[in-house]
Image 1 (spheres, rainbow, N blue to C red):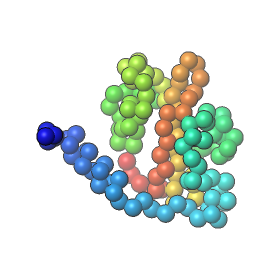
Image 2: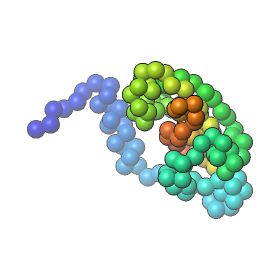
Image 3: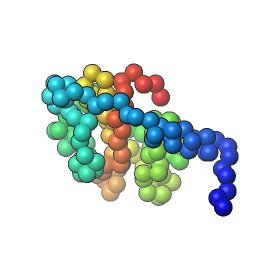
Image 4: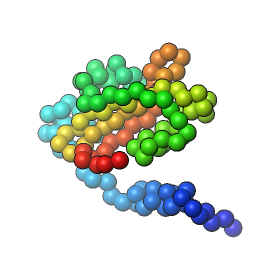
Length: 134
């Protein structure tokens, strides 16, 4: 029999499970994707092969770029990044580069890259509705 979890972690897991069951908003129209040159249909394997340089070549100049140290506890928008990184990278505060592009009138894409061995490597990405407050 499974032990029941309580507390903030259990509440977070319950919210994440609810979100996973909720229908996602529609992706930008083909016209919007052609307008920006971006598509939310980009597969994860293609994103995982990107570096900041190749992402800019593919998408153009980002709307926003920020570099920050990785920490065990991150703000809501970045809260999954420690789980995507290697444990030593979290402990050492490896640098993460966050780059955001518009995917049309309603959606943004943020891609995070982590510095490993003097180079930037894909860490994670998120497509999110413009106007969302984190």
